Amino acid sequence: MSAVFVERIRSHVGDVGGLPIRRALPSAARRTIGAWCFADHAGPATTAQRMNVGPHPHTGLSTFSWMIEGEILHRDSLGSEQLLRPGQVNLMTAGHGISHSEESQTDRIHLAQLWIALPDAERERTPSFQHFAELPQLDAGGFDGTLLVGEFAGQRSPVPSFTPLLGLDLVASGPADAVLALQPGFEHGVMLLEGEVEVAPAGYNAVETVAPGTLLYVGPGCEALELRCTAASRLLLLGGEPWATPPLLWWNFVGREPAEMAVWAQDWAQDDGGRFGTVAGYVGPRIAVPPVPALRRPG
Image 1: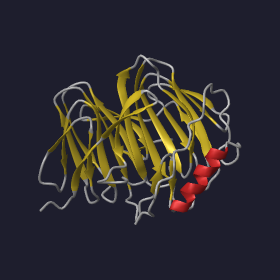
Image 2 (image 1 turned 30 degrees about the horizontal axis):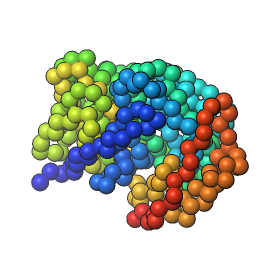
Image 3 (image 1 turned 180 degrees about the vertical axis):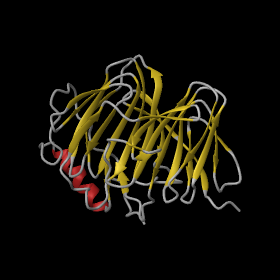
Image 4 (image 1 turned 45 degrees about the vertical axis):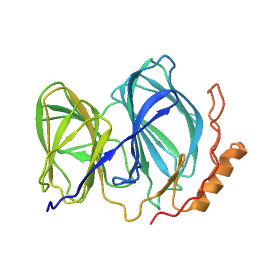
């Protein structure tokens, strides 16, 4: 029997603001990888109608946008207006509450949009927005790496986090074979964006082939991961310390109790500029809150 637990998670196919997406987290099989609680792979796609996501609210999380191709204009209720270009990260920490809009400025778009659940001590913090135009670069066995968040191979990303996390973008233009040392206390996810990669976790008695639309979960206790590809490929390696109890996710909110969700939904529906503020400069309607379903406290 393998000492390390490995699980294949199939992404859900959907659409966000006119852009096709694959959603790996949350899923019925797994809600989180560390504090990573939401993982969308948007594109790569060339669309006749550009992505346009009207103002909508968030609580209790940080949104993490990693741009690969194209440009997106971010506006939020703090007054931030930031163009996100390839190789850059936007980090918006909602905390108590924030609202924002996103509009693509190019026909071609490729990005990863991720959410990071805030721990109890930080989830009501004052909202903030940060833009990171430069991130650490590294080489790993033929893969060119960008360290998105956390520490890896002696380098540290400038992107802050409130819980121990790893986010690493790895891209190969041709055949590559890398062995990556991992923090064994973390759980990890290999999320393919392009191509096909063979994944061989240390302590696991098989090799898994992963393509876009599949996230490979690797449980705690894994000390190294071998990645092999024979052609151009791209992936994200996500990791973090396992959460004792996954947070509650509904719509654009991350919380702990169902009653919180109802209060936040009502706050947004009132449209009074209170908890979530107002996004200036966006032309178009806000996104309406859907009916709150019967929710259960995670456990």
